[in-house]
Length: 165
Image 1: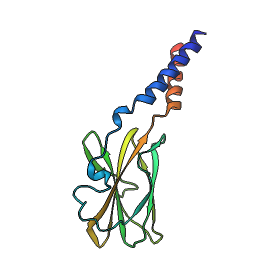
Image 2: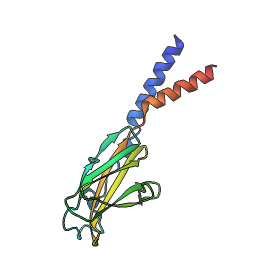
Image 3: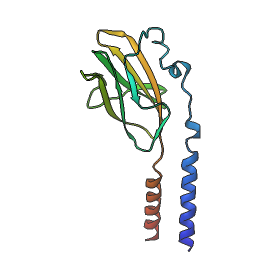
Image 4: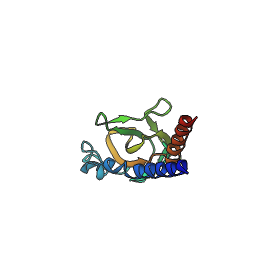
């Protein structure tokens, strides 16, 4: 009976921790990012080169592997992805299969699977025409990766069983 009560208390504590652990991570984007453009390119953007279909801003997931995608009606569009590094306070290129930028093909559709960090992730999409790299569209999205509660409970139970044995 004591073990069952202990496990229930443990599960409740883990659930409460998971529900409150991201309160400090709700970091607002700066004004330029909220507008969908970085400050350095805000005035140079003439038109939208791509439409990002995923992520939707403020999307939440419990999977660290995440597919970003979008479409364009133009030819010769290059897309770069960057993720904000909160530790160094700067954006860093996301590399997929050894590449950090991609020319969108004839179909006008692009998709890349990227790995996110647990907690808040800021993903920056930079799109430009191959022939005019100085004119850019910059869009920033926030994606939250929740802690995997099932894994935490399983790991906690495994640790308790090891201690009992």
